[in-house]
Image (tube, rainbow, N blue to C red; front, side, top):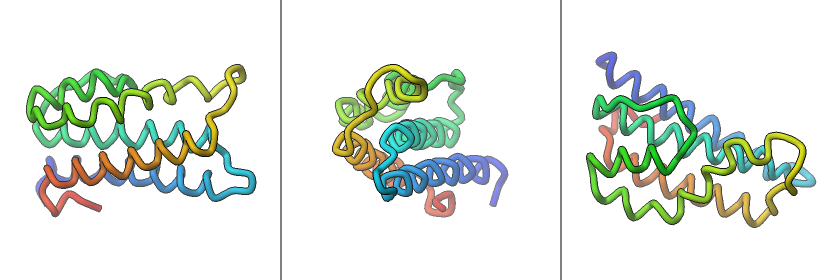
Length: 133
């Protein structure tokens, strides 16, 4: 596999690790929703970055999903259909990592995981099969 495709694949593998960690956190008794929500945000972030890496598009080292999605939209306008689903996850990058606000509900964390699955399928359909883990 050429190095540039291997790099895309490494982003996708990291995204999958975050997805799997979110699944595991939700499977705990009781579910660990703050950790699940954080890893859902991280998974979507890495999926979007994998797409940008594939297209050799520079991006800042940020956690702002809206900004990353906007970059993806400049390459493929169909990414705009993800906006309403992805936008709420940006807050999960930091909001629940520290003491303060109430943790997300189980339903919110499961909803975030559903977004991960949607973005994973969406991005995966736009990348070469050999990059997919």
